[in-house]
Every structure is written in C-alpha cells, then in structure tokens.
Image 1 (cartoon, rainbow, N blue to C red):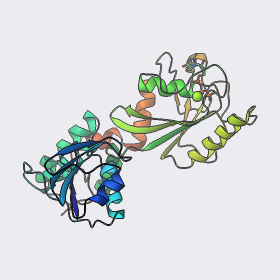
Image 2: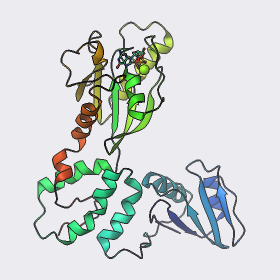
Image 3: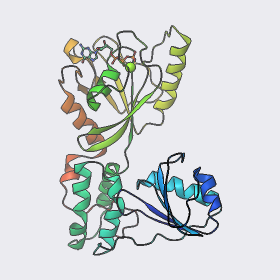
Image 4: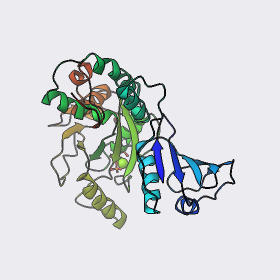
Length: 308
Ligand SMILES: Nc1nc2c(ncn2[C@@H]2O[C@H](COP(=O)(O)OP(=O)(O)OP(=O)(O)O)[C@@H](O)[C@H]2O)c(=O)[nH]1
Ligand SMILES: [Mg+2]
C-alpha cells in the first residue's frame, strides 16, 4: 500500500506491506526499524528511507512531480496499490491553498512563484463566470510550471551554441570555429525572463557533411526537431536557412554584429549581447504573453481546480 504527498521541495511516500520489494525496485537496502538511510544508488533519485515499523516506511525523494511519478510507478510495478494522497498541508486554509502548496516545487522562478502565490486571494474573490479565454490563458500560463522544449536548428558555425552559452551565462555547449563543432544534441535548462525551458542546441545541418559523425549528428538534429514545442530556425547574414523537416515557429538571425540576416523575426549577437533581451522576450511571448501575466483574473493552474 502506498500514498504520496509533496508538501514543498521534498515528497513523502508512505509504503506499507512487504517492504523487501521496495528495496529491489529502488536498489537500496532496508534500514532497521527506527533508522533512516540515504539511498544514493537509487536510479530514479537520491532519497531518504525511514523505517517506521517492520512493515511501514517513508520514502523521501525530491518533490518534483516527475520524480514522484517515477517512484510511484516503480512501486506500482512492484505490486503495491496506490491509495489517495494524504492531505499533508496542515497550514492550508482551504483547498486552493493546499493545491498551491502542492505545485510549489514546480514554480522555479520568482515570476512563477509570485503568480502562483497570488492565486488563493484571486480565487476567493472571484465571483465572475469562467470563460473559454480564461481556460486558454490558464493553459498558456501552465508552461510556467511545465517547462516547454525549444529546439534551435540551422547551418553549422553560425553561433547557435554561443547563443545557448550566453543564455546560460556559462559554458555548456561546445563552441568552435570549425563547422560541425556540436556533434550531438546539447540540452540545458534555461531561464527566459522567468519562463524555464528545456533548450536543445542542435548540431549544424549541412547538405554536405564531411565525416560520418557529422552526418549522424545531422540525422539526430533532423529527428529531434519534430518533437520540440517551439522550433527556432537560426541563420546568420551569410549562411542562408537550413532545410528543416518542419516549418519553424520562429526565425532568429545570429551574429547580427556581422550583418543582418534576411527574413529573420529577431536579430541578435550573443557575443555582444545586442538584441538578446528582445530575443528572450520574443520566445517567452510565444508561450506566455505580457497580457497573460498582467491579467488579474485567476489562473487554473491545476486541472483538479473547479471553476464553479
Ligand atoms: N562575431 C560574432 N561571432 C560569434 C557570435 N556568436 C558566435 N560567434 C562565433 O562563431 C563561431 C561559431 O560559433 P558556435 O557557437 O560554435 O556555432 P554553432 O552554430 O554552434 O556551430 P556548429 O556546432 O558547428 O553547428 C565561433 O567562433 C564563435 O566565437 C556573435 O554574436 N558574433
Ligand atoms: Mg554548436
């Protein structure tokens, strides 16, 4: 039997029954009754195991919904039945505040946190009827809690990886003068003015790959482009646009200090910082607009929230 609740940054999953199976799925040893172990080898996440009784223990992984879902799934696969979450929010005044607390681990920036924390007051004073536009705005705002994936693809050696490194403020992607520097997708989590995104930096796409590794890298780039929530085509003033297997959602001109890229929606130069704020804002606006953020009506941030 198991239950889960996540009152902030750490989740608590209570497990009752034949506990040896838990240790098999989590690759951890069973602590003696009354002791707590840190399971470092667990393939899902480092977690604490507190043995409360011979047949009852608490698992404490990080509280992110993905991690909790993976641990719960592993336990269910091992034969445990799920029981409803225990309401572990004793300080919550009402249901809406409890739901805000449950979502706190997902709010990773001050923008998302402030918006989330303002919801109990908004819902309490809301007497209007809920509209289709409220629902659509809420879906857009949900990207503040569930990071979208952005893929950047274009010809080689135009500054795609430099752009990612500049957004991160540190080196993550390999940058170089040789076309084909990036051999595989480099993924990083980037904060775009309060919107967290998973940024995929693709290898350069060229019609004339020289090495087998380059050619394989291009195949990977072409495939991965399909799944991104937002596809950015990148080019510089001289490269032309790469052929992509999907129409891009946005065209960005890079290395704008060397010249303007024809037909780009936004121009920027990562090395000098020119146009970077505009780029960040333009990307964020594709998911959440300024009007969405400024709208004082409540946000239905959880599908379990009733609107009447
Ligand atoms: N002038 C100028 N040069 C830049 C700028 N951004 C990057 N570069 C240079 O452009 C070259 C290529 O940069 P990368 O970031 O490796 O380019 P890439 O598109 O990732 O290249 P591949 O991985 O080969 O596809 C490097 O020498 C960078 O220093 C910029 O804003 N202005
Ligand atoms: Mg690169």
